[in-house]
Length: 293
Ligand SMILES: Nc1nc2c(c(=O)[nH]1)N[C@@H](CN(C=O)c1ccc(C(=O)N[C@@H](CCC(=O)O)C(=O)O)cc1)CN2
Image (cartoon, rainbow, N blue to C red; front, side, top):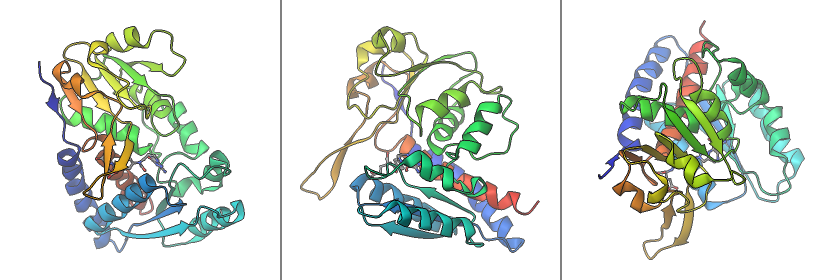
């Protein structure tokens, strides 16, 4: 079997077209969504991701601003940038690009955000709503990567209801919220949230109909761990050294050999990363629409 490769680019383009119509409709009402980003330090991966977020916003006609602080920025500097975004009347929603440099308390910084402007759904209030919202009726922003995975599966005709999903990785931006999202009413998957202390990871993953790998450990998921025909979503991205073309090679958590066994494969690059960016814009547009009600 050779897996069908899922294109994050194509699915994100489909969602962008829907969002563009919504942005145009808001424009007709005199409402113009605006996104802001806060990045601290110059981690090359974060620079690439934040640049991509602003490129996508521009493509949709969404205005965006960025505050980039040096890696030596103090907690007071970060706090000031967050408070400025909170009080700026023209900013619809913003994100704090993670990870923050060592020494910064990410949770404390996320908590400083106005939850109504939290475009990543990572403020404790919004994560709490995700925990409460089993029925999915609560209108709060969803973390972009988990939402991107679910959208990618649904738009590719991959059934999740009643399926066994192994999520490998228990981080804040992917694993933990994805487990909650997948078990919501209407999505209805059965989830195992595996992590570095899981005893028999091979057997756990091999039982799954759907595998989501989000650990940042290159090649962790190998062909022998995957049930033939399973859908595999590679979310971990590790940057290798910069090559002669001036670009870093990106490597996922999933070994290339998995493509010979899986039914579907979302690759790195070109998969869930692009969905993450578009689902962030979905949150910005939705927040702007909410302001019109
Ligand atoms: N505030 C947040 N920080 C982080 C999040 C998040 O959702 N919110 N998630 C990750 C990184 N991430 C989002 O910021 C992200 C990851 C990947 C991509 C992406 O475009 N990937 C491309 C490759 C781009 C490149 O590196 O050249 C792909 O996979 O094809 C965008 C955003 C951690 N931080």
